[in-house]
Image (tube, rainbow, N blue to C red; front, side, top):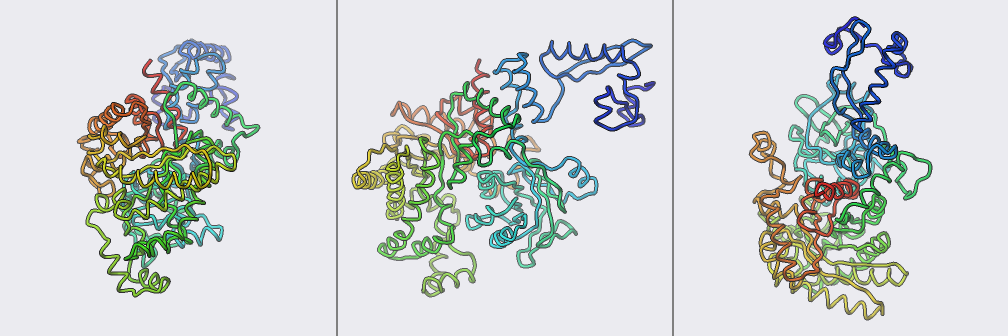
Length: 630
């Protein structure tokens, strides 16, 4: 009372509560407008309801009271958090104020992250920031909030987690060797790498909080510490990561669990949760509208089950190399790589066969009735070897070979540019026994699970094909093994063999490649790299480019529709000109980006595939793509 709006904004006057409900909630002793001027309050409430009903939305009102008369100065649609946007949209549809289609358009798909991830307690985070606890800021590569003790290598992350500690794995950059430690950690922090670096990709697939490319960090593995300027964080010190904003904070900031995820975990049909029911209803409305299928990138049965819980309709990418890093098989992989003779390689691969078969069987069981796309081995072989003289010496002792010989072999496998070197289908062509082992494992698993009465739909994907003859050679091998296994098991099994389109030449010659491929899956991470001539892990200048508006958006987050998108369009059109029923999808990280999902809908893809935790985002974005066309 007796104050202007500017006084409140400037903070020189303390505002009174509007009504008794607000007064009770805040615990203030100040008199409310409802108590002091009940008639004016009744007019204000009635007017607010009238405006909300007229605009069919929640409004932000500005008003004043002059000489006992209420004046409305302006009204506009009110800003809201992601949780509030979702809740209001569902409630308004149920009240008959808006249609289901309008409710779907009222929620930004990215806002669903606020529903599905743990977040920091707002008061605790505000306190940490006011106390200057923010150490640095990196890329918000894996949304959510996590706090734990800093550890600097993967084995320690596992050991500490086994003792019941929450840990944050801190690395200069991660590699496939770090998989187990990443799985054990609550969050992952790296000094290098972009939004599609190894750390970012794996973190999102696992549902881990991740801050990547935090260049201010100076990490010293020897001392087991990291420093930002003069501030040093040692092993065991608490740090907190905000994967939604990219902030790294010293100390432990308390987190709050997702109300939706608490219920989803392990339960597909939770009872008694209105929040979950609201979430489920919104996504069911999206499923009624969308035309794009939504699959998930998953390598393990637990990831597959999480994906199904979020509404995935299959696996769009299983990266078989992640299965090779388990402790019971990495030595066999290394033995295979270091063998000079084919017979020795086959002996090592024979040890891996039953392990891979069980891996694939677990995925098929989890995805009963849904397609599972399994990519044959993709990364260069040197990634599987230990780093440094100590690791080589330990391996030499295990397999009974001279350390010098192993070091020489490891050195011979290293490449100047491994992303463009001996990887993907090139491995399978030079070492066909690798593809043969994986194909046998896939189809033996499929036949075994089919005999259990489970519907199995395997799709084998050959990576990095640039020439139709590469695919032809690998397809003949996979087909031969598949037919042998199916006949030996005596089952009726349908399968497909296709390829990953991730090289410009593949897109430009897609009509020829479709003569052999039964499906295309666009690997947009690598297609972006090879189109731009840009390594996603070395693009340290990207923030400068974005700040200077050289590029409007990060092409590793959102599909570059003019360049990469043009290649995708050409590939889809040429591929279907040869094979009209060609199944086409996308399995790069762009599959969970709303703008990219809309693009995939426009070019006529059949599905998108993304990390399990982004499946709901893709479902909503796919529905909005249809509604925008209307």
